[in-house]
Image (tube, rainbow, N blue to C red):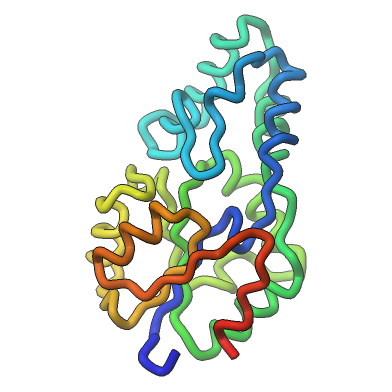
Length: 203
């Protein structure tokens, strides 16, 4: 770690525990019978991908959900079903982020969406009394950048905006495809296998 200046964390599957099946079950209860076709571990499809890459807004996404289901469901019902994907952030990982932030520049690079970021993600980061910006110098979020991992575009945008050198940066991600793309740019990488406690790499 002596040459590393910046650590870049993925969110889901790395810092945050996920439960895709819980989310699938919640959407099925709303009448979204083929939700399995849209939700993946690393990449989403249809209106879910459109929301992640910023091509549709949250209100438009909710309208697309209602149109697909074919019946009236509230914004709150949709948001709660979607946020059920997110289980929580282990306290030791928040503590680790706090410790690392004293020595390194810390970024988040995540495929995510405004419904989760403005809802449960922000809530879970406040669990120890601090907001999300306490733990990270910058957030690089797919829906804001209008690009998703593993596309090279999102890495190009991160590098251009931050000015970091990939060879001085470490990416932690749970997707082999994302790791593969990052390595092509020269990033140091660590593939996280959930529910791995990756703190050992910083010892």
